[in-house]
Image 1 (cartoon, helix red, strand yellow):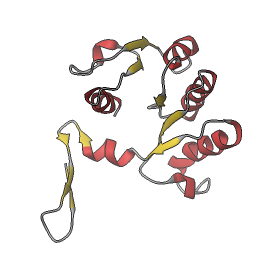
Image 2 (image 1 turned 45 degrees about the vertical axis):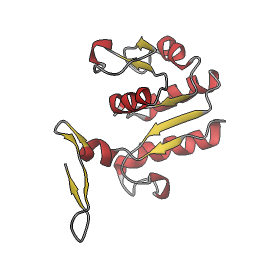
Image 3 (image 1 turned 180 degrees about the vertical axis):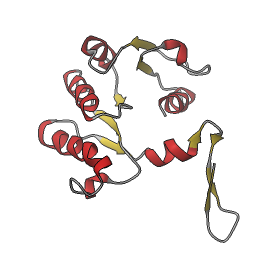
Image 4 (image 1 turned 90 degrees about the horizontal axis):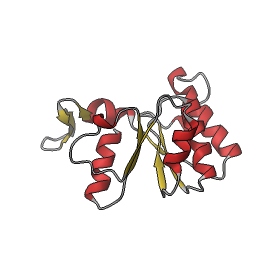
Length: 152
């Protein structure tokens, strides 16, 4: 998902900074302004460095702890926009235990709301990541018939 967002951003003339484990994995055509090498999401110095001087952060970490570490770095860097990875359901409407896979997202949403001056933007990416952006190219909806159908 990050590579596709980076391509879209650079195509629009935006500068993109990347935080990842291996710069050689960045696809051709993505012209990064900087790449900060990080090992796990506990690599606080790398995260702090990557958060400096940016207008927005898009979090691709799947764990709640990774989200919180990056959110705290965004707060210290006075970043105003924090896009949080999520799933394909609005988990803010669920309660703990309704769907256990969403419990971490619910916990992050509540913790951020209670403790952070940043109000994260949630992208429901599980659907798009799993179906539309597969290794077999982008999918989408076929609207030529009476009812739209998913194709991928």
